[in-house]
Image 1 (cartoon, rainbow, N blue to C red):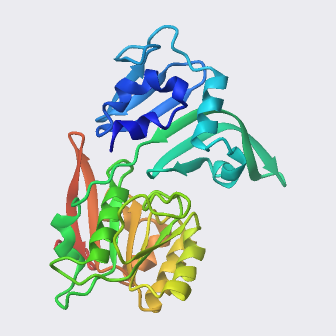
Image 2 (tube, helix red, strand yellow):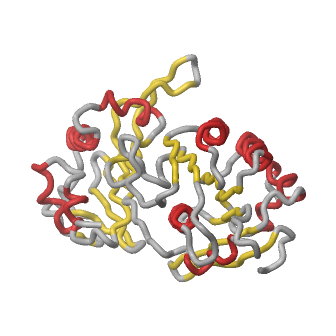
Image 3 (spheres, rainbow, N blue to C red):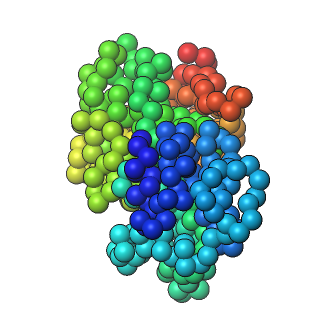
Length: 314
């Protein structure tokens, strides 16, 4: 990632203040903007304040607060001065910008029918999550994703938040799609509900997800899986963050159609996943052939364990 990419997230008149943060582009994880308090950035899992001159300091600076009009201008710039074009994404609380970076927003919610979010106004909080591709991160576990016949096996990636599961999933997709020493390239379809895997912008994947990969962007997983099976005839179907019974039902239907499955779920261990109500039957029925568990030690993410469908260490 280049510093110019970070600088162009801000209107030209503001870029001088963000030069020092942009120079850390390869290590920059997020930029948080809140009204009436100083901006912060996260670099290598450490928080820094951004003072009025753009210096990165470890104590809250004086007179560096963000004004409401500052955030409004930044948001307009991120939306290419057409917030209306991004209204559907903003209603969900985030938008994806060129480069695959995800911009979370919060403010006052406008409801309709009593409980349905129609839009957001007075957006006073912005969190820019910087997308980083780490190609090769899945290389060490690729052999576990294939059987002896060089066929992809159904795999569930288990990870607590912040352990790089989406980064791992993205690289797995790339490797399966392109082919590798353990298996030939296959057609992969991705339901990218939150635009985090492929980081699509105007329908084009900003991240490298492989040459045989098709992406359905911004679609709920349950509907998206069935749409892709009917339209793209995938050999492998990939989804991020299983979260409810509907997701599981769609996965089971996809498996019945002959697709191999690559999915992720939040959790700290296989045992924790087994206690999730909507996962009990899935595990008991042996839907997945592999379980990969990620963990974080000393601030670094790593593979905790790899298990077969019976929960035995591979």
